Image 1 (cartoon, rainbow, N blue to C red):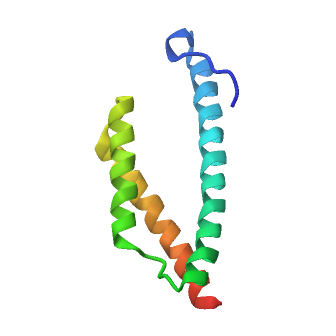
Image 2: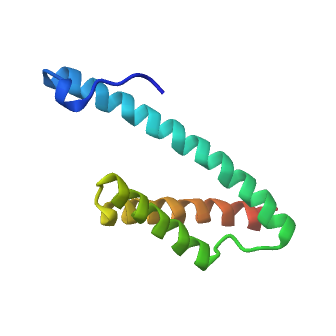
Image 3: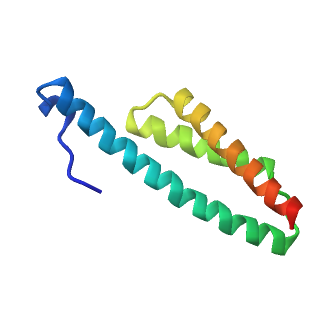
Length: 101
């Protein structure tokens, strides 16, 4: 990860936006990395005969995100909403592949 300028050290909107753009690229890189783990989950679920959706795990992931958000001072509802969307996207991706193969 790159060295960032703290928000309060950004003296104008251009520098602030530059930092936000850098963070967005880092977030995208992390999401792409996470998708790689989802791809591996597909193979492991297929090998074990497991379905794409495992409800207990869905709730565990969302609760973990909410707790991590609270620890960081971020709104847990926001994190819960974002992670639920992320998990649903991941499950849909898994389901498409598991049914295809």
